[in-house]
Image 1 (tube, rainbow, N blue to C red):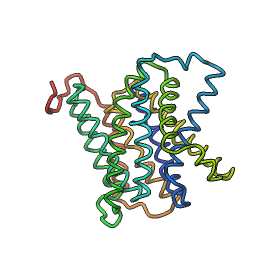
Image 2: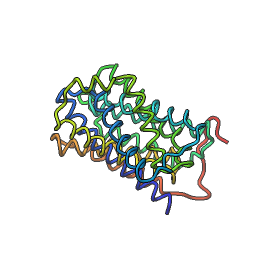
Image 3: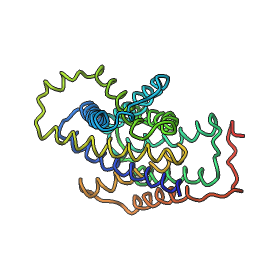
Length: 302
């Protein structure tokens, strides 16, 4: 039951991220810098949580000093890195190409977890991984050369985002096992916020004179792309392994494609629908477990 709860929580988080990708594309079309979106959404979420728990429940803010380096690593290299490079990739190319390249992350996590952490790579987990990758390829239109276009720079950014997302999943797991979701989220967001202060001074944002309407949009984006999804994601990581979590998160591009269809318009081809079904089937396949199931033989596995 706890494992099922973990899948549901990760799926909800992925759904929020999928919707936020479409919202981000709309903002980019209005010439808003990806850096501003990434910085403000992390900073707003951090400030809201810090103020709330600082006033109502200060014990949530207690951590061991020895864990600060890990919080910084997850917040900067994981959260900030994956957020920024993913949005830059979308701006440099398009949503489809960025998603396709970024979602090589499940493969990276699976390889690391199996070879380094000796996590069991069962036949069901391997099948789910392959099915989800195939589903993403079809859902984003990877078969259509005209749809998948973008600069090499954009694809490079997307791959860096994939590495960062992998770091977030693998390095974030120990934090979720030691601290509450709120504590983990506050300090990971705090690390990302501190990092952005060095990259882009708050005074630069102030001098941009964004309207009240723009700040309301930034707050909305912060809520649906950072605050809510990361609460659900960190909660889900408490119940399932990073490999299962990141495979489940491949629901994000499915939601992104479907939401783009309804919000931005366009046609959803039959083959893309097949891809959507494949991703959903992969998530369902992860539920299949057997004591006697065979493990896939990979280098480094026991």
